[in-house]
Image (cartoon, rainbow, N blue to C red; front, side, top):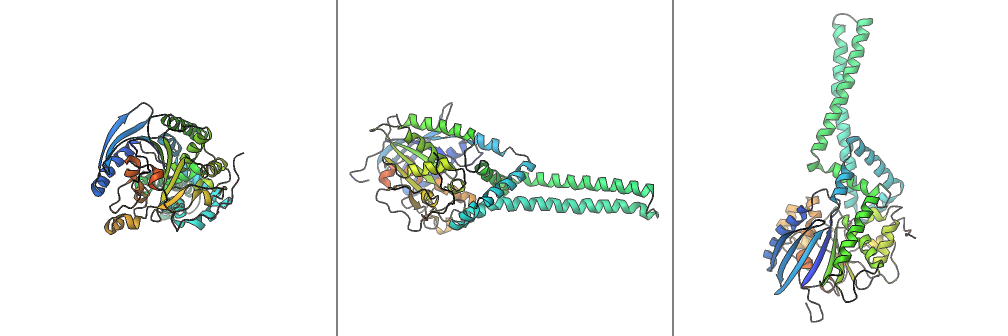
Length: 424
């Protein structure tokens, strides 16, 4: 920290998770575990204490980094209840979502354009479609084999006695047909339910619900989510009036595009004080193009363009090519095609998993795609200038930490989206 940088002694952090049905306690325990690991690696002190409040879920962090004591309060802005409600679909409802979501991304040409940038997240998007269809065809195949075989067996019984026509044969044939169909349907239902019960390992239903949630209104936010984002904004606005040095908003995965709109609303409303806390935004593993490329995502595109030029505000976007679930190093403003004159943000940098994780650790995690998508919130055993715990609990402002930092040379910053209309 140079002499021109402001030392942070108090900070408020607001974490907006991605599409995650898990309770926010998961994030506190993850922070507690990984902060201790990073502190041991990097040689600083950090302690996490749970906090309770009626409307928020959070924790406080007392740290001493580079000899400087810092107190940070971290709140998870919860929308997991909305996620769980959207996931409360029947099996048939999920297959309807599959058809509708696939049709939307194909019809609008969005899927093809997303593929131009990064194949990883598009493959991740196609995975639930493929897996659910495999499950359906497997259930149909087994059901047809067993049900059809049973029907043929029952029909053969009267033939043993030389009955190949007449009332008895017709009656047995009808009964055999009904039993065959009943067995077929029963097996299909049982197998599909069994597959769904294993989704904690397969993630097919979870990912299908995730993509369907973003696509259901072709890029617009559902009313219940807009209402929750208004609540998020109010809580952040209140923190901007507190006696703290920095208010940091962290948006992870699909939480990043929610944070974009929440912060844009705050800045348009003139929230904050001239000599008050510095407002900063850290987007991690973002999947913004999955939404911003859709035809009706005018609000999000407008918010991206607006944030890109704001002064007295810092936006750092961190991703990694090793994370196959995000649009790594894709400048969300530029690729959406809404780059305004005087663009300042975001600063796009790489977490460089292959360099910041030891060879042994990288080998262990490389094919654990969902775990890697959360690595931004975890400890690195060979950290570079990205350290989640120094950013959220250290003595340096996000703006100062990356002052003069050049964006990643391998970032993608060319317009790709077909749809660039803004909200009027």
